[in-house]
Length: 191
Image (cartoon, rainbow, N blue to C red; front, top):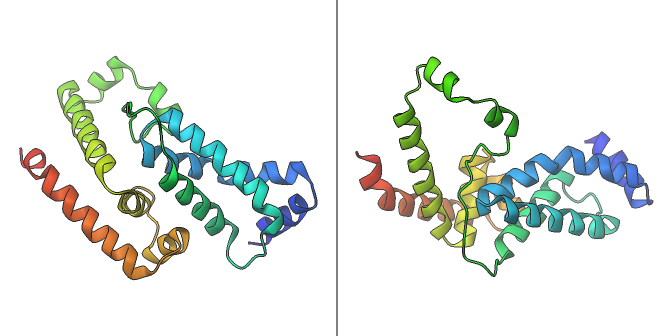
């Protein structure tokens, strides 16, 4: 994209405003990927900061051999995969937490008025929690491929570029992760 290219060139020359514009353009997706991968808003914030520190540090060496977005997502996936937390305590955050505006506008009254049963909502939250718990048990590369494909909607070729591997490897990660998830969640989803 020409707009990205202009911003990158300006940022490479030391224009902090241009770099900030790049951050604003990609920050929501980076944060969403980080949150989807870690399912913990504090960890996601740590990953987010690490990603943009690395982007800032490496920007001077960016040579336009790939799309800037692919480069940013590759950094994001690498940081997510290598991220290790000293504490094993994970807190449950809804997959839709990134959209705080919609979350904050839901009231008890609107839930009842809209016809959504609160017990169904509780059941849906419990299923989402169980899915996230099983997702956390996947090996890191499988989890990242699964998250990018099924939560972010990226194509296999794009995921392969981001994770710096072949399309076949991504297909294998997706096959294995989907099979594991189906096996683990089958008893829950059949109820």
